Length: 355
Image 1 (cartoon, rainbow, N blue to C red):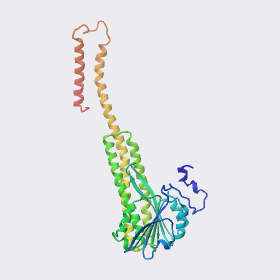
Image 2: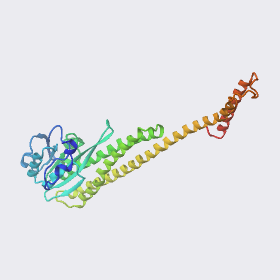
Image 3: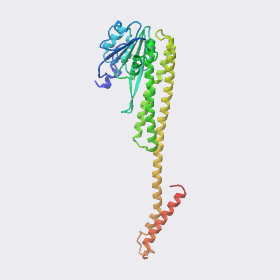
Image 4: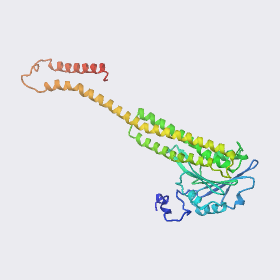
């Protein structure tokens, strides 16, 4: 079965709801589990090999962050779901890496899924990865498709006790993870914006057919960003409206700030999409202008040669009794007339601003 077939919904056809089937690319390094436990005075970061029991990871009075990298081990995810009371439908959504951004509220936890986006400068494209978050009491579990993320600055902030995160609960960690992922959208937009500026300069100064695929590639990347951000603001609004006991009232202003960020990102994405669409028109216009310049030069050259061809055509008929044929200076005189006509026409075109 092809890789594309392995990632498709064909694997889930006719299966009952809650069936744990991984839809996505398997991590090359396998499944990795890491745990961060902290409070105002202590910080601990370690790697574990199993999901363990809740009592082994969660410490009373501390916040625990369990980070799961790699989703292909459905047995491990089922064990984690059983240990922490995560519904099978939520586990099904976690394993489906084509999930739309959304928020679900259950009695014992809050589930949130969004896209983590990084810009691949080498290949000039966006790297999109799904991240699922489960907010429990005194604990946050994140599920990522593969190792490597944008969350390391947050881990360093927790370790060095910068800001108020070490003095807040799991809901603030939940917010902080979403916040740093959304903040990274701005970095991606900066990179995409620089690429658009370069394409705009090329479209104006050096329009060439190879520019069209590049413009279409940028439009696809912006579409990926739009798909990630558009539902995000709706789900953050849902987090603001839903009164869940795991989300404290003190965290609400920070969630409202997240909503403002999504609006700003959405405005920038729409602006870039309009600019990119306009660049295609600029390219076609520049190409048309260049063609017009070429056609104008060729037309002027052809126009100059019309009277010259007429003169040389008459004297090329070689009739015996044609006048001037016997004159010794006839040939240079005719050449001089041709040159004078050409110069006169060039002066006329210049005065008419056709050159």
